[in-house]
Amino acid sequence: MKEFSDLIEQRIKKLEELRQMGIEPFGGTFYAENHASELQDKFNSSTKESLEESVVSCSLAGRIVSMRDFGKAVFAHIQDATGKIQLYFKKDVLGEKQVIVKKLDIGDIIGLKGQLFRTRTNELTIEVKDFVILAKSLRPLPEKWHGLKDIETRYRQRYVDLIVNPDVRQTFAQRSVIIKAIRDFLESQGFIEVETPMMQQIPGGATARPFKTHHIALGIDLYLRIAPELYLKRLLVGGYERVYELNRNFRNEGISTKHNPEFSMLEFYIAYRDYNFLMSFTEELISYVAHRALGTLKIPYGDTTIDLTPPWPRIPMREALLQKGVPPEVLNNREKAIAWAKAQHIEINEDATHGKILDEIFKERVEPELVQPTFIIDYPVELSPLAKKKQDNPELVERFELFIASREIANAFSELTDPMDQHDRFAKQVEAKKQGDEEAHWMDEDFVRALEYGMPPAAGEGIGIDRLVMLLTNSQSIRDVILFPQLKPEQ
RNA sequence: GGGCCGUUAGCUCAGCUGGUAGAGCAGCUGACUCUUAAUCAGCGGGUCGCAGGUUCGAAUCCUGCACGGCUCACCA
Image (cartoon, rainbow, N blue to C red; front, top):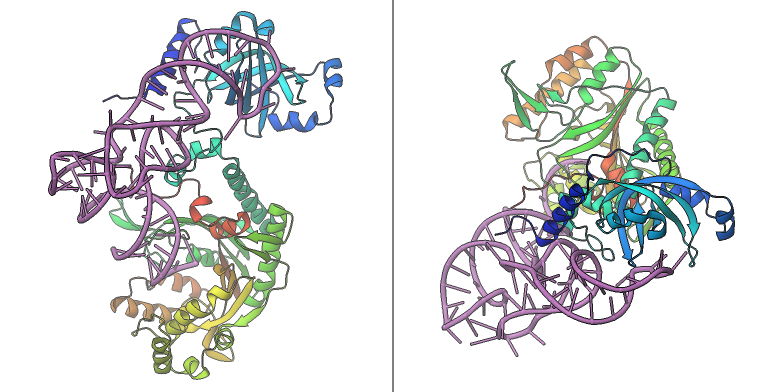
């Protein structure tokens, strides 16, 4: 059995031949002064004649992505971070060095100096005066016309995906723009970015199963955070009024087109404001980010167009259920809710609380319909152990979720600041945990202690960054917006 | 975890009811100093995902396994 394919052996042979010629194909350094798209843009309107008159020299480094060999002349395209440009290697110009051109392969990284001109077919091209090999590529790249399509290889070898699929590079460049826009917006509104523990002794702030690890020196188990919420609120107790954290959360749950075990989350907290304020704030934030990333608020997603122009409707959860034909008595009576859900063939957990059952019905009946941006507000209290109750109805909390493209994009509420109420709600969660609810919250005595010092009234929000990026880049899978998604080991 | 689909050359894919494994691109040799999916002539390249089974004979049929995709369930 061969260790390498013939194609790799051939390239290793070329590598050795180059070394015999005194050329080290990995040792070079080359500071290029230009980039492909910079040259393309700058000389876009320069004619063949004007380029001939005014000698334009340039230097460039990048990867050879195609070659056409004519014996004493060779055409190639080189690709750098910005784009592609054609190269022309000519024996008249390069002399003996033309021999080295014959040792070049598609995939090699070179640095070159040359002069711009236009070919007979009017393509802007660099006539190469001199070049160095900066890296010999030993593995053949995917085919020039069809590229790399195999989804598994694209995720496992993202580097190859990025080389050959420009739209993938584009998506991740946009991800960067989106995240920068979020930070810029928040900072313009007086927020500071903070970092709180990713390794927590008590994983809190969300309902999810955590990853567990162990610290040897301390002799304790630690959990990768499922949310930063409880630490960010401690910072409000400490006196900061506007804080945010934009970083990874970890949840030990299923993997799907919408879930990766590590995912990016924006959480921000603002003192002396409530959830009503946050709805307008969210409209501003997301429309700002969309405008920066896409230059428009009407964005294509799958088969539809989503219009992010504010304001977005605010619909109480109960009203949304009624609108979709859920009978009023289901909203007020747990047994009737169970009976109705069963009659409608909606799968529910019969031991669940009334609020949880309504949530199941909501996910089945309402969520798929929420394509255009919509705030669903006022959730049942038992779904939200960290949110503030509504003054006029203690069964509900001041909470909203934002849905776009049938997907939850944001979750926010007016924060519970009453330490005794918080303690009771933790106690209820601990009880649920004892009953077998693996995702119920833990008791966090220190968080309650922090609230006992007094936390200002505040509102907080979480936005799933990966899902927002999916929305704004028209991606159907979370793996298309995470550079290295989690996969099972090869073989 | 369940269901459905996929896995054949470096890449993209054919391969029908079982009968010696195919193409294009990429590669190699040669020709060609303005091509751009260059062209022309020739050549090489395969554990058909893995392991069993049925059969005279399996890429093809059956079973199991691995990995991936879609989807359902849980979740953000």
